[in-house]
Length: 582
Image 1 (cartoon, rainbow, N blue to C red):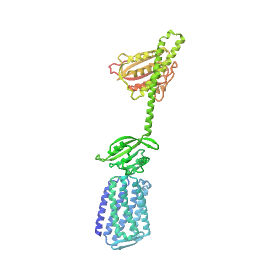
Image 2: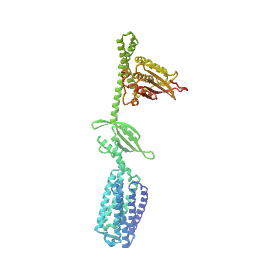
Image 3: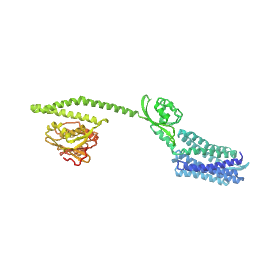
Image 4: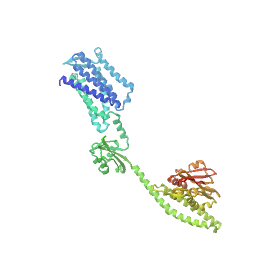
């Protein structure tokens, strides 16, 4: 290759390097790119200096341009070091002062080059040989060069580790970049060892660096020097889920550490490059989703570590901006514990249903029959003697309380079932209250308690008849329990907007404010003995609250110790012009 041809190629190289600088400048906000711009500027000055040196004729001119491109070559080292440190997130090793000192140290050494004609620190011999400048460096200059190459070697080691840990599809071009840009350094080392080869090695250094910059454009375009590839490995490997990525041909192109470990337990030592059909042979549905690159979910079983594990696999298609499928991503979630808990819940629900059946048929039905028999005896109690009358009353109280607890327990079970459906209808509220008071007539008479309801005829509510009756019976029964001998209970109702507010007022023992506030807590049941020692399970109010809420209403209480209590609940009402007042 003639000298003119070499100069033409080198001029083309410096021109293209300037274009590369403009392109890289667009990525200046990316991690480390501002230092890389410094490297490229130094490379432009270096190549320009080489061109001018080879175009000069006299020793003085060649030495001047040699100093220019050697200064640029020296300053490339600190910029390259800082670029690598920031790229691999080690930039905190050097603070701003340390970075400035590094650049200044190399700048001072470069200044010595310009005064070397007097100091003789850099060169011990300078001469022209066949039109080429040949220099022999001093031991100081050689030592400095070895320090520079050692620093560059460490930087290349960090770059190698960085490239090795990025995405698999970026590793191969990354290694090519390292090889191409390292050739320039190797040439400089050869020039240091044998200065006589400088005349033909110098152009090669320019060409090799230009090829490295061309590959660098491609990598920058794909964010090779951004934080994304570096952070991607940290994020994927810290996820607990396994991730498997396959291309359109069904080949595995990437996976995280968890996926590699998961498949290794099934005998697959390496995943990269394997066919997805081979890996997913035992799970045809999963395999079909990956092969067709369609979105879907599938549950799979896998026997690992001697036990059956259950996994949920979400498959997503990899698509370009034009919505063209390029592969699939599989996210594998371990749901073994979740499935085990669901099985336990299903068993508990089955047990609850069995208890529901037992309480309903084997306990409540006989109690209801006994209750009817006791009611017959209570109606004829005047025919018994005093002793027998007391026995009948005690027996009636016990059976009545037990039947009430069984009924409330059944209704509570029923309220917990998701498939329980209320059948709301328009009901005459006074009729429902009258029925409830009649059911509790014997219980109230036993304590000489008068139960009054002041509900105007025509007051209607939209509710389930059984649920409404249960709520009223529980509240009136609770009022009877905590009202003393000869007390009174009043049931009122009034219209408030589209709601009917029903209240049950007694003049019983009442309760403290803290006790009233905790009365409807679902975390614990509240049960206290009544004024005559009546017992209960505390389920009545809880069941009433459940059915009020399911009916779209709310329930609350107002009470003062020694002054009685008022329980309120709301139900949907029929729209009327006039309100019903108690």
